[in-house]
Length: 462
Image 1 (cartoon, rainbow, N blue to C red):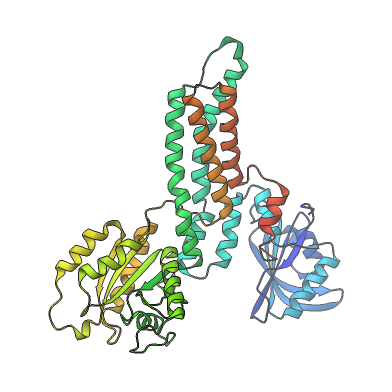
Image 2 (cartoon, rainbow, N blue to C red):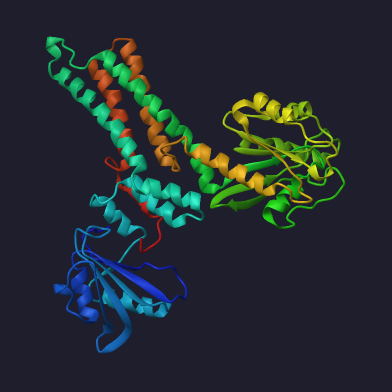
């Protein structure tokens, strides 16, 4: 696409609304707008000012509007930019776009405004991708994550890693210039120590992708337990809806049910599962198999049990063999309304000791009387916040994961090379490969195919 054209697009969502916004960007944006604007002389107005008038098509008034001026470089694209606020009729908006095109503008392609912001150095590529995530955010946690990346959270981390490597890369390049003298400017022990530190820094960022992906799509939360423990009742109570069938007959749930559930802006993907038990029923056995699959995929597990029937040992025997690294468990002791004796806190201590880092919380509750359901919700939020605050940066983009993994692989190759005392020219190849991979994240190194793929996913007008 020609990045010197002046582009135009409707920036507001399709459909009826109180107002619509049309954006213009490019060296002729103010000139083109002036040709169709009946009001102040825009060519002499200061940046970041708003002007009342009419958009005209010849002698015909299209609409009464407000025109905002953003002069280069103090605009989103760093170019001269105009935003026309008009009435929200789709017909009016389209008429304004058509008259601007008639007077020299070109219809913008998807993401072209943000692409120009990237090409002109206003933002880097990871920040541009965060713009799309910000627009798509459906809850507070997704919004916060996208906002942090748009402010340069990941960019700053990558910049720091590259700066540390570049110094040694330069010294090794210098060695190659003095190859005949057989000298080493780059201390191999220092280089080895630096690379080990960088890999240790990259590892938690890579690991954060599982969390980032979960936040983006809803934290997978499996509700598990034995038949008739109250799993489906808990799903219904949390959703405040009779989503799952509840009966006194064991084995009612024979398939998984998934529903999105938002608490304080955090999205959880609740998964109601079939009760865990031995069964001869073919359909129920298939449901139980799906239960184990969903347990493996879950990040949070709500283990529900009848506090009047199972012992602490029974619960631990059920849950301990199923847990994988990184999974968290909230033990939900259900049917507390029918509890005859006072519940012993010794059991809570046992759960905490036996489950270790997997243990998130214990809740004595009742789905029938809705006792302590608010405590369960608070426990989910608290554990989420504790998990998120462990990470300075959370990855949400598969492209970033691939680039970081390549950088790490190259750095590990450098460590291997140092241990075998290979020459600087071979070390230089792997260091450059790592630097190249890191630069791909910020867009310092990129190609048209990658840019086309990223920005084609944006809406037109952004």
